[in-house]
Length: 193
Image 1 (cartoon, rainbow, N blue to C red):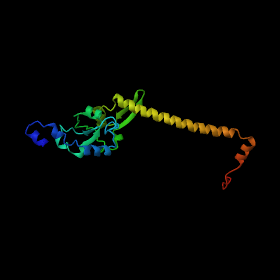
Image 2: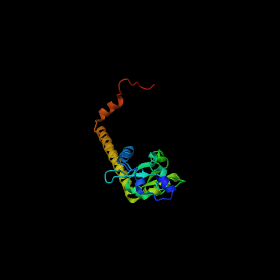
Image 3: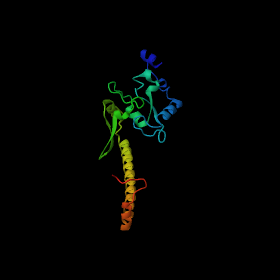
């Protein structure tokens, strides 16, 4: 219907573009994406409902409006920022088809936060067209990194405390016991020849 109206030079109403927007389609996308935005990987469905995102914009690619391979789950922010942007030469990454995404994008921490950096022109299009380094995402990624570093520090501290206790325990052995420990060997161990 959309193609027919366009061929006749008639205006296509939103009712034709929005036919895909059904609860069962959105639920299937939520399951497929584990309720994560296909671009920023933010959780969808807790604070906001999310959108069915058309990687290739439906206004520019009307024949792909109902194509399952063109429908993705996106948070409202990423979907709004991307809008109808499309780069034919370096299209935005497809979270399903372009795996692993790490071939195109990587996280890079610096003094100001954890940034999404691109490795390829398509990665660049994705970061720029969805503003993946916007303040909220930058802060969220930085918080995750800092929490992970604190956990590592805590684990290392616990481990170091245990090692310190063992060392203290050995130091409290009487000298005669330490000589015994050095001379004794586990059963079945032979002296080297």
